[in-house]
Amino acid sequence: VLVRHGDAHKKIWVNEYGWNTRDEQAKAEKLRAVLTELARPRWHMVFQANYLCLTDLPESDDATGHDFGLCSRDRQALKIAPRPSYEAFRARPKAWVSRAGQAGRGAGLGQGARAPGPADKPRRGTVPEGFMLSFVAPGVDPGEPGDDQGPPRAVRRRYIRMTGCNTGGFTIRWADTEPTDPGDGPSQYDFSLVRPDREELTQKYVICYLDFFGNPWAEKFRFTDIPRYNRLLERWAEAACRFARKRFGVSLFETGGNERDLVAPGTYRPHFPDWHFYYVDPIKAVHAGMKRAHPDNKLIIGNLCYSDRNHVGALYVAGAKGNFEILAIHAYGPRGAHVDMEQVVEAHVEMVFRGDPDIPIILTEGWSAFPLPESIDRDPAWRRGPRPYKPQEIEHYRQAVLDGWRNLTTPRPGMYDPKWVCGARFFVLNDHWGGRGWADRAMPQYDERGNLRGFLLDGYFIGTSDPDYIKPFLRPWGLIDIDGQPKGDIIYAFPPY
Figure 1 (cartoon, rainbow, N blue to C red):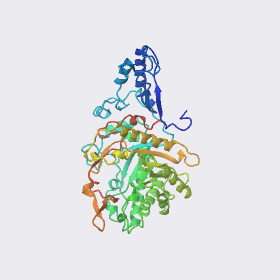
Figure 2: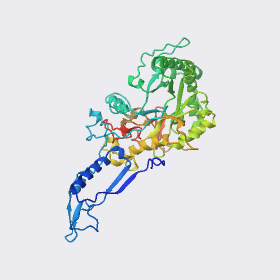
Figure 3: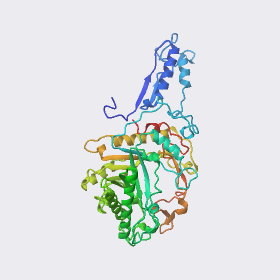
Figure 4: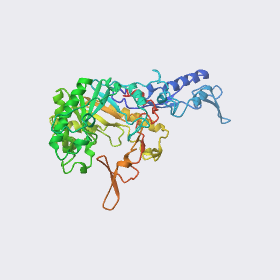
């Protein structure tokens, strides 16, 4: 009934249940059966169940007893005596345990234990046709160099394989495929190093990321000879897209970097007046080359940290119209624990205003379980490493997954249509160590009084007065932990029913 009336998210409190029977053994058996059943994921909507009652009801006769009570009682002697049903109730674990069935840290899927059987799995939702669903799964393998380090790739892949995710991807880098300046001659490309993970290519949708940042020879004249830079970039984009389409059948491309609206002004001034011109200028070249490779190719741009009308409109002011087919946004909510639908709506409204009502949105971030609840948000333990997760933390992650998916897939007549969104990446799959190389690269920035106001890191300005911010710390935002253990049963029901 709740589902039929649009209240599927509401919980059920069974605030009375029990058996009025003289057969105390039968009462105990029924109680065991019910408590076992209520622990199954299919009854996740039951958040509390209160047995009626500890002792028989007041009107029952002490002599005969056998009312609802788990215990009999003697009102004269003020004593109670446990019955078999009480022992059955007491024997049930009271602490939260994973419905996935793992025995605890070190015994889960990451260490090779079997996945839960069909009877144990919570119910997974259906991914709408045309919806690109994936995870951000950060981290190099333990021991490899890199800022982020997570569980082994094989473990991450195994979990993703269990979910409803249907989108893979790979990267083609300008610096790798055109390592030398062609000068005035023809460009020479080497795409032999482009070797996507086979598993990524088996997904229903595959996105090729065109990475043009950090090409050493091109960076030398990126701002001093912008026309030449864009001309060579366009030529490379055409060749890269031809290769990706012919070799791997790819028609979806993404470019432009991550949250370039947060890049420090010192990176692009005085060459460009503001971030949106700096961002869109090379995208025009990439889009032109991609379309010349094949007119049916589509380009994803954006990855905006803020997705209000002003930011989306800024892209149009800089000339984005006609140079992209999908807009990527990061619609983080006020607490980061759900999808901020207001940003999705504002982005769509601005595109309608700009004459692009049919351009869809993809959430490359913003559907997330970050940050953790307020009580543990600033827990210093995360600087030192992982610690056990509490039941309320596990519930926080579960609700974040459930809320975001419900928000994205629920029509709101006159306000929101799920057809506006063509995909989402959940942020993130796994806990990971972050910032392992930040301390070596970050440049502190001070105000006129000498107070720390932040760090300049890889072109991004990080505003903070905390000198420890750039030190390595565990990002506990995943649905599996740093050891590859699932947090509850959430990962087995992604997306949730």
